Amino acid sequence: MPLARYCDEISHFAAIGGGMGSSEWEGKSEWLRYGAATAAPATRRGVADLLAELDAVEGRVEAEVLAALLRSVRPDLLEMRPWLRFGSRTYRRNLLRRRPHYEALLLCWRPGQHSPVHDHRGSSGAVAVLTGEATEVCFGGPPGGPLRAATYQRLPAGSVVSSSDDDIHLVANWSRPARPLVTLHVYSPPLSGMQIYPREQIVPVSATEVDEIDSPPRRARVIPMPSSRLRAVREA
Figure (cartoon, rainbow, N blue to C red):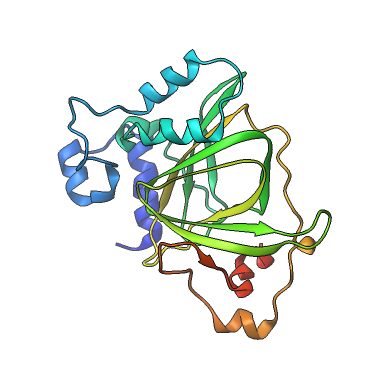
């Protein structure tokens, strides 16, 4: 199935509330369920349980706690059909719930889409990869100076990562083979002081480096990131 049609069918399926029986859809799209092999339906905790726990707390929740909460649930994309929405030009942020002390979002990414280089200043955050494969690039540099890619890691479905305040990164769907990516994000408190860093502050790459590398990393461990991997950021 062509990739564009694949993404469109996901969005269409969400929009109409499911155009086919669950078993038929799951047979065609094995990625639709997250954690089905590790949690029995009778005991699986979903996104509703996650939101209920977050509603019950007060004040800022630290990043490690948010990550632990995300690891404790096995969200089912079928229960989040109303929020499965993909953007044609950029990734799409779909709000699940916002309270004074937290917000939860479902982000949908077509292949090649990525966030800007940014931090989460003033907030703790955690991200769970529900389906597909995400790439996280972390940056570092002197205060006010240029930003250099420090590390990158490939995050397959089931991965959970966290960040706080001045951690600088980008998230991308550079999966191979190309496929849609869906991620669940929780921030506490809701993002308000997030800073997006301009391209001019990122260490530039040469045309030669850009032409030499055309695919994301294929190893799951954290390894130094070639500066040429920033091509997509520089072209954004």
